[in-house]
Length: 206
Image (tube, rainbow, N blue to C red):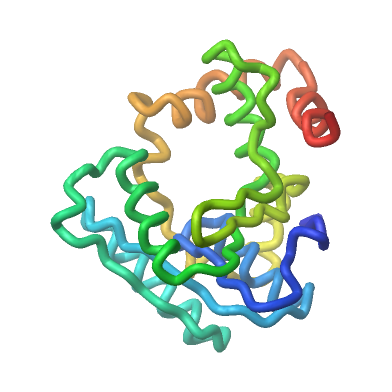
């Protein structure tokens, strides 16, 4: 069952970051129809691979079918750094222009990946993903961090949302450390029943 930390859902105006991935589509739908919150959507087309246009089209259809106001932005050619950090910098530059509060669909499985990444970097004391981050000119909230990927999968199936979801093929690129952890390392650790999710949940309250 999807969970949300209500104190990290602003009661004034906010915008939801939606990518066409399972997590953001489900989280946006849940906030509107279960949490009964009004907000708009924003989508960034990275223009790196052809599927990025498919993602934009899926978000457009999602917004149209469920009556969301949505804004769409394509990466300009002068943002030539197409690495993960480069794309994050581009998105943040756009968010800084608009300002205000933004929400994401990050969840507990993302936190597990972040925790393992911190451990491999020698920083296990770092919190995986913060509930709230204040940047210069804007803020990002992550209210779904106690929900799991399976929660979102079940919600998508129950609410016929799979037609709006486009999976990013880079999620299966094992040259990316997060993809490798997600597809190779974490399943092995889960087989040993090490309770990674319980370990990560404790990090939220340290």
